Length: 293
Image (cartoon, rainbow, N blue to C red):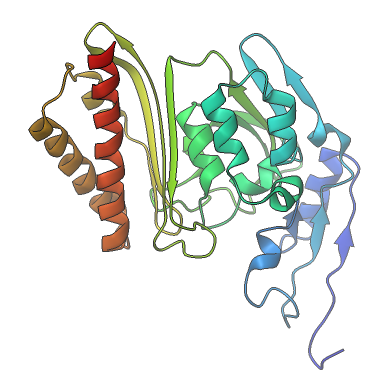
């Protein structure tokens, strides 16, 4: 062993309560799900200040899946591949394709839903996909009573995409609605893991009634600098009357880019340009679908 280095202590709780208790006793220890993101970070190991690990692998309740007519509820230790396998027949074709586009099969079989949502300062495809669907999560607060709290995924992050509850809560469940709207669009440009400063992740769910976009829900993510969802912008989309002119599409796109600049002070010029062109292409496709219908 190199001088000054230490191996982490690994705790193996069997219940959610035991995991919270371990965190209370060892505040600097990190919850460990699939470990795909943590182990990819530069300098994770060996490290003189190596953090101890609370492994969630042995907690059976975190690997359960439940579904009803209205939603699929999965434990945070369910892998991304299992999410697709178990919920695929309830999800739309577009949603299942988006889930299967996340990483390689090796990554999807190792990475967990909870781990993907709780990375500290990086947002990737799954949080964008689930936020677009208005999914909710259950958090267990790190206190002696460990109260459970349900909230929308959007409330987990600040506008820069930083996970607000790191060290304060354990994400235990995710509830995904299956009563989907008429249309879903999920797109990713660039390499979110390898080049997060260039990548853009996008999701949009909506219906069309006559000449109106109904109940839109849009999410835009720049992995290392921005998590954007806005009720005001969704309301703007809902006020659109189809068909759209090219000038109108450009005007709405410029409004989005302006809001993204305000939401993300560190967004790169490439990301903003990609976000603009991606959004314009989606609006153009909506327009074309409407005209063809």
